[in-house]
Length: 188
Image 1 (cartoon, rainbow, N blue to C red):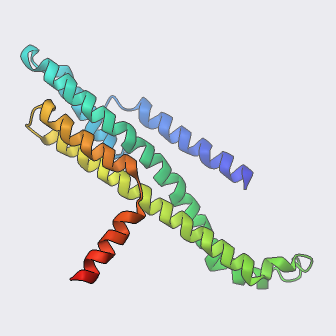
Image 2 (cartoon, helix red, strand yellow):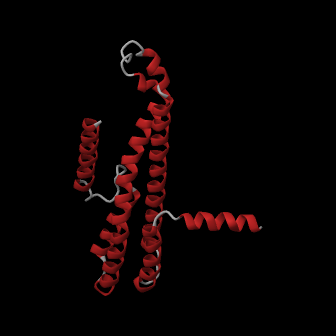
Image 3 (cartoon, helix red, strand yellow):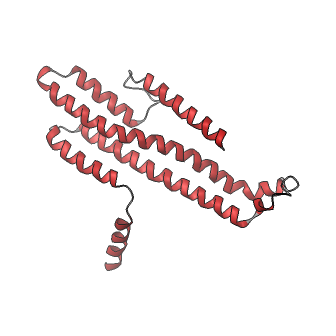
């Protein structure tokens, strides 16, 4: 498992280095939406007229702040996606593999244990939950970036809205919102 993790992280960092090296081109199909939007915002800032330069720089700064979060979520999303696939396949193949390799695992009876299979299933569910959480946050951050890039509002107005939304993103998962939502549904 340790070797797999090292290889996996090496591949992710190589892909990341490749993506960053090729960021000069705005329109590149091998990038996330966040990378496209930040590249576009930079190109707009670079060609802005002198009277619009400060506003374009502020808009770029605001977009870049969101980009940092979107990029982090994209990396975590990819990591947990790969783990969820591996553990999902383990859940699917575990019973079959224990039958196929019956003679080779005779000393390892614990491998056939329902407890071990349940634990592997629980880990798979946890990996899918993390993947889903980080994918949702990445998508939300990219949507927020789109709002900033396409908006004609001033950065003063945008920064207030973005600050509130980034604060909401930073809070993460909350049981209170789930409980409040359920109690509101019950009252109806």
